[in-house]
Length: 209
Image 1 (tube, rainbow, N blue to C red):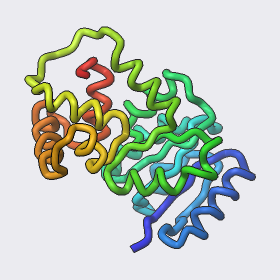
Image 2 (tube, rainbow, N blue to C red; image 1 turned 60 degrees about the vertical axis):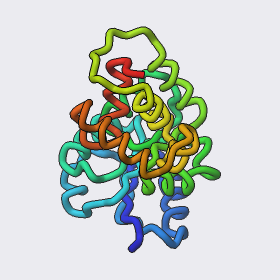
Image 3 (cartoon, helix red, strand yellow; image 1 turned 180 degrees about the horizontal axis):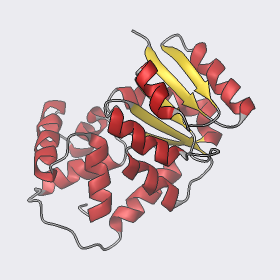
Image 4 (cartoon, helix red, strand yellow; image 1 turned 180 degrees about the vertical axis):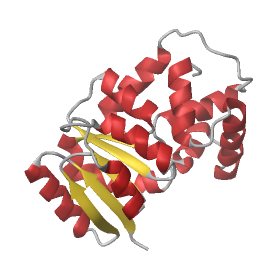
């Protein structure tokens, strides 16, 4: 089954370029490409996409606002932010809104497909500069709630927050993939969250790692 994709990008040339890349990929089906996200609620109800490629700066509703709405209505839909912004405020706001990954537009030609593959496999791809910003934010001293996470669970959560897939987390922590899944299940239970995005967002907001 091809991955069903919606695209939101206000730059006409870039929207056409990304549309062509997706259409020619073979593993994806482009359901629609739009210059703004003002009608995103109706569009996602109509198309039920697996993945949304979302710009941040668009006329009317911003990509971050649209992301919040999508995750509220279709929480299982993955969202990859495509943007020129790599400042910490936009990065963290996008992640808090529920974005599954964050890719700078200058990397679209070389990294779009690998980022999509990683998202669909449960990872959270980020450009190197973006990942650095997230980690720096997480390392800032913050008052955190004690959720009873073990040191190993904190290691897994930190690796998860870097956008690593389960396979990479296993390698990073020197444990099996099944053990990674067990740790992540316990992390979700302790943090009272239901998905990776919520767990990473909570970790960032509350300085858990």
